[in-house]
Length: 256
Image (cartoon, rainbow, N blue to C red; front, side):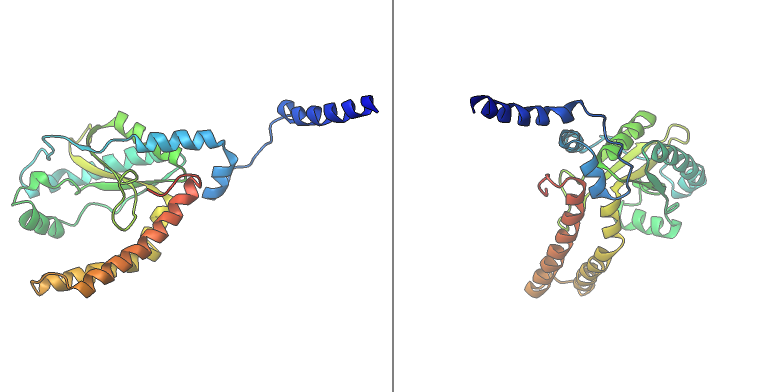
């Protein structure tokens, strides 16, 4: 009887140890964010999240374009946009991401911004040339950031994963000086699920907030208590959408 009892103890121990020596499971890649998470060790995701949160926001002391005249800026803008798109496309390919380009900022809109917001100084217009890089994982976004920093001179970083907008929106916005045309360009680094919310469900909420704020500005008055309450309610809806998308990339991470 004593021998049988010992055997019962030993057998479970052997069963537990066997998987440690088994062949690794061949897991096929998936485009689903949650699937990607569960295919990799928790420690890998924690390391990627820590790396993302360690990206510091900063702004260079002398951040400006090499031209003060708007027409001179637009003379080189096309070449700069081509340079940026080629660079971003190459980075996106390396990190299994996607490069998206809205093209050069419209010159009329740029002129309005220079006159109304930048005191007539076109050298302060830093988003005339811009692209977006979308990735499917935090680790890939980190890699895109590193590759961008290696290929250009970083002038500004705003890490909205560390400090999200009131709506809950998160991304990393980077301003860089391009090596060939020497123009300052804007690169937004997105996680695809969050970008999908921004361009989908949340867009109508954003438009409603903008409509309320524009009306108050047009009427040259402060927002009413009702309007402030409405905006906060809309932002709460936005936060719920963005937080849910953010959790998909790291289920164990608390929403920031």
